[in-house]
Length: 171
Image (cartoon, rainbow, N blue to C red; front, top):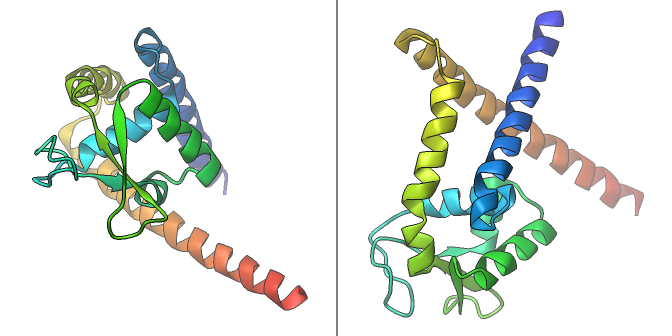
């Protein structure tokens, strides 16, 4: 049992230091860690789509709900984060033609130009994080983390559904 506590504790420590590093690294660009993580997801979703306005051929648009599912922020945090990124000129918001109740967010030219800086920030972090690990160890860690992410996602969805059903039964 102690081994499992140690794994969880070490994951929390790594996550904490990643967020602190990201906060500090993004400070000179007037961005916070939450905004940086959203930009990372938007960069990751690069595609050959064109935004509604016809701009940014290499970057597709995302709805806020798509980003919430990917990043696991709550709606309030995501709404504030997208508003800040829009005000800072990194993203633009357009009405979603498929659902008038939602918006599509796409990167502006400023957001696209910032990608290389963001990737360099991540390269520095990953270099330090992975220092001393062999290729074989990296492969094992990557595989284990993928399994753990899948397990935790399934567990959370199951628990969330169970709690939701229990609340419904009480009412």
